[in-house]
Image (cartoon, rainbow, N blue to C red; front, side):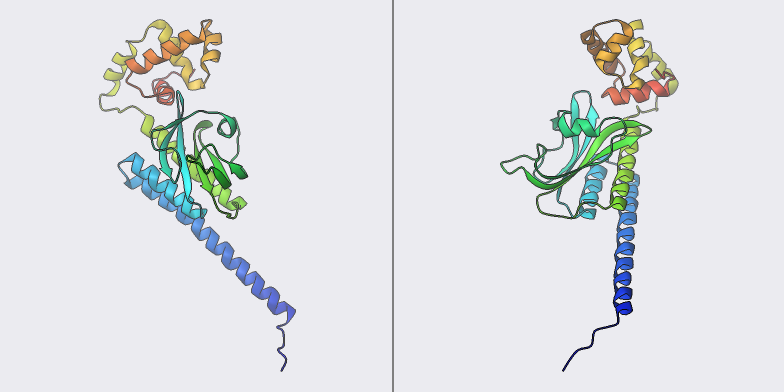
Length: 258
């Protein structure tokens, strides 16, 4: 007994139907990731809990199991959320290698295959796929979303990568908003704090929104880079700020555009 094959046009139609289904399924997953991220940022009072939830959802979206949310501060990239055998929350990583590359101007997500990742801890550092997504908002790079898998998984499609970039923008905006100093004491308290700065400290403070390195600031002001570092440390202390990013936002909010 022979089995007749379906017509060629029927096979083509079935293939097209499967393709449309996979596309619709992917679109729904991408929308769900962004929706869940928005809900986490809106509902979680604890930013650490929100970052942990967002990282978990991004990993699930890509069928990956290890990752980090890193935010840039004075001395490097600090871990704000972690999953898997990676550096713990609070750890500081140097901005070098691939991490430095992703934080450069107009950088795109970096996809790396079959490597020994320095972002893993323990003996086995082998990673089949690593995705580094820059966290960027209004042209400012504030951190990196890291997604890793020890086993073989499909690399992100163009649409998936675009959604990860949008997620990165949302995380960057949330971080910068959280970095803004509390406004409960309003203008009087802010003005009083600024009066604590010396004239040289105020010059350094006014240039901080430009995101210049200590060396570039030193050249601009005609002083030593070490002196700039001391001024910045004093500025942060006097204004009760955590890092340079927060100081830059504070400067813009108070009319200093660099």
